[in-house]
Length: 344
Image 1 (spheres, rainbow, N blue to C red):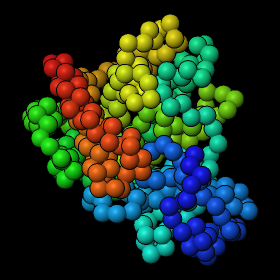
Image 2 (image 1 turned 30 degrees about the horizontal axis):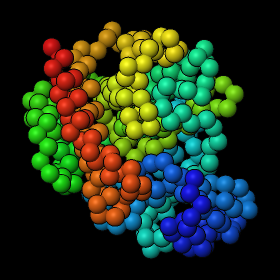
Image 3 (image 1 turned 180 degrees about the vertical axis):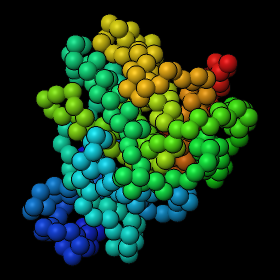
Image 4 (image 1 turned 60 degrees about the vertical axis):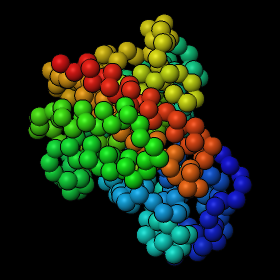
């Protein structure tokens, strides 16, 4: 948590909330959460309690990026469903208040595990966290889009064609040099799209353990965070994201499980997670899973290229870390090509 200046006019926010949020009473102070590279997030301390404000970053942004209004909409729709989310309070689309759109939600207090190694837990307590993570992922993909008012939350058509096209454009818009593995991966994905299988679900878009809060006294998810990349699309993109993350090196940068004896550490194996997910959703299995892995490596490479470009432009939430991440774009692309070779 950063106790420095809040990076926005707290008096202006207090005035706006006094007019638009029931029960709010100012004044307020703000502290910036240290994590996150995309939409800056702050704790608001007020007379009536603490809240969380999430805003678009200031400055020139890529088209369709940092969609805090979509984050607000999907979490509001999911409130009190099988998918745990924070309660949404108000969305401010008047950029004149602090210079960009923002929303305010309840603050959910809980345990956040920055890495899937779950070092803070006893070995015997770790497996249950992965089981709950699996339950929540399946619950996201089982959301009734019509009943929740989310049928129009994303376009129709082939999700992967749309996503590869979108992220290629985003990557080109933030490209700072030619990275040969990225070029090969983009070409391979475009030539190897899976056939439509009829699955169209809610997709979180950045599902991993550090985007979840867990109850203090039980292996129960209290809230899924960071819905910026959510849409309607194909569920295996989220599943592939989990397995991709686990394949990264352990530690604060990679936040993965590569090289760790998972059985000895009480951690779930990739295939066990996939099989449990398929069982929950009544699926016989997943063909050509390497495609979904390769797609996620590509998308993550495109995302961190954007983070790097924002750092160069002076708009990154955490500039120092953003510049370090920028050096890994090629590594993600190379890992995606390795995953692609495993597709039969």
